[in-house]
Length: 312
Image (tube, rainbow, N blue to C red; front, top):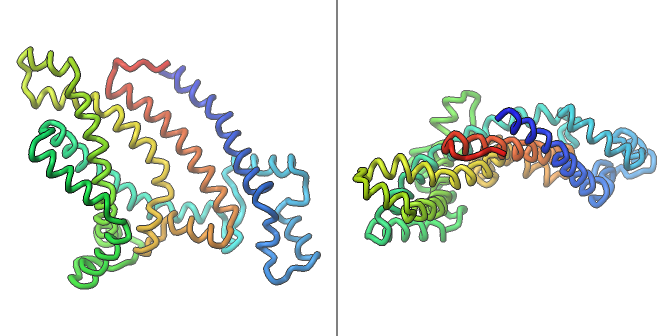
């Protein structure tokens, strides 16, 4: 196990190097001269030269790339071009709200989607299966903007069950006051495809020989579903979840924007609108690192779910 983890960590080094090279090429070579964005109306040769010197753009490309590598290794991406705040402080203050919303959405989605997927797979071809499939298909065909606008208007503005938008300083206030409505709207969008996606895994496992053997041995349907089918069906579910975990860092862009949540989603939109390259580069690198880390975690979870899995 330890040898596998060390080997995977070593494999992350060239992957991260490739990501850094790609990001550097996109922003420094293909993306044009950022001094033209920062100079604004004061576009004089002296101003341009000063900005280029501050950003290190007067150096050669290898020297600029080494500066970028140093930023990644130290996780110090300088200051934001638009707010003049340290990028690390900006990201640190935005991750919490994003994880509060996106993390709660992921947990609730799994708690609802997996049991419903197992249920419709067990009764596949029956009324329950057809009814839930129709509901999921209809839910998937409606735009997320429709859910958000309708939810804000009817549930918040008309009925007053939730605040229309907002965010506070207390974690528990945010979790129980401001998160429920965007959480509900997010679930309306995600539950449909997730239930249908997970259902296919359960249906595939229910058709395997080991299920027929277990039934022939007289095992109860509950034990077959919980001990055998669920364990094997969770392998692709874990893969799907681990692929989505890195994006918890940037939160739900649309939901944060509409509900006034000061998370990473809002920050990404503002950084793109203002061409704030340091923030965009930092978020890109963080997502790349998180993706590699969660891929490793996924392999370890496979081993925990099914001890027969060999980590090589």
